[in-house]
Length: 247
Image (cartoon, rainbow, N blue to C red; front, top):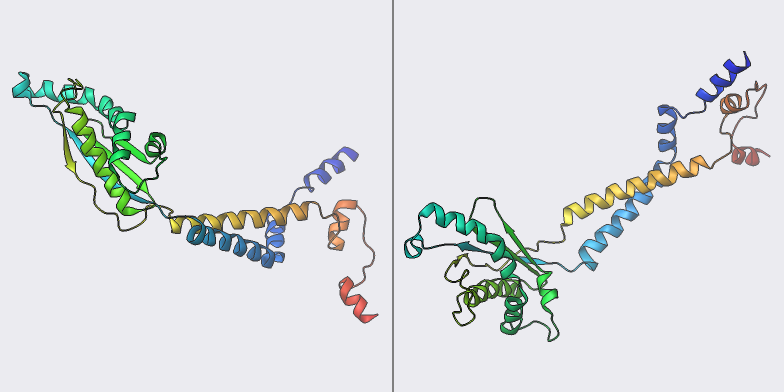
C-alpha cells in the first residue's frame, strides 16, 4: 500500500501542460518585456552596428577550341570539365590576387592576398563549364572593380606565353562582367529581426521557467496538499499584500 502511494506521489511530481500555460500567463509581462528588449538590441545591432556588405558577381567560361586542338567536341568538353578545379584554384592564387591588389585603387596599402581571398567566393555547377565569382566589400564600386579586375587579370596571366601556363592558355573567356550592386547583400535585416524576436522569446521563457523551478513557495492550498500529502483545514483568504492593507 505504501509503495502504491509513493508511486502515485512520484507521478504527480511532474508539471502538467495546464500548469505550464498558467506559468506563462502569470509571467506574460515579464516575457514580453525581455523579448522586446532583446529584439530592440537585435535591431540596433542590424541597423547601426553592422556595416553593410555589397556583393559583385561575375563569371568565366572554360572554352576549348577543339578544331584548333585537333580533338572532338566531346573530348573538348571532357577536358574543360577536368580543368574546372584547376581554374578555381588558379583564379584565387597569390599571383592573381597580388596583381589585383596592385591594379585596384582604393585598397589599403597593407592589404594582403589572404584578406582579399577571404572576400572572394568561387563556385561551379556540375556538368557546366562555368566558374561563378562573387566579391564582397563595404564599397559597392570597389567590389565591382575587384571582381572585374580579378577576371581580366586571371585571363591575362593564364594567356601569358612567357610564364608558360600551357594547359591554361586561351581557355578562359569572360561570360558576365560584374555590375554595380545597388543593394547590400548582408546583413539580412528581416532574418536578423526574426532571429532576435525568437531568441528573446526563448530567453524570456527560459528565465521564467528557471525562476519557477527554484521557487519553493506554495501558491495555493491544493499545491500544499499535493506535495505534503496533508489535508488543509483552513486558509487565510487574500494575498499577503491584501492582508497587510486590511491590518
